[in-house]
Amino acid sequence: MAVPKRKMSRSNTRHRRSQWKAAAVALVSCPQCRSPRRPHTACETCGTYNRRQVIEPSA
Image (cartoon, rainbow, N blue to C red; front, side, top):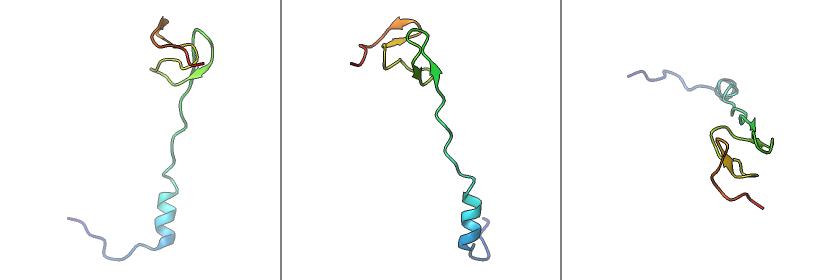
């Protein structure tokens, strides 16, 4: 099993971790109401999924 021989400095650790970024949330427009929503989920505004009413619209 590989084990580090020396302690990695704080600078090197942070430099390596600087590339760990969260991906932006992908959004698509709803075909019914054109509001932005996440793909493969029901629209929270109009309550449709795959052009069918699946949940009650919120407010």
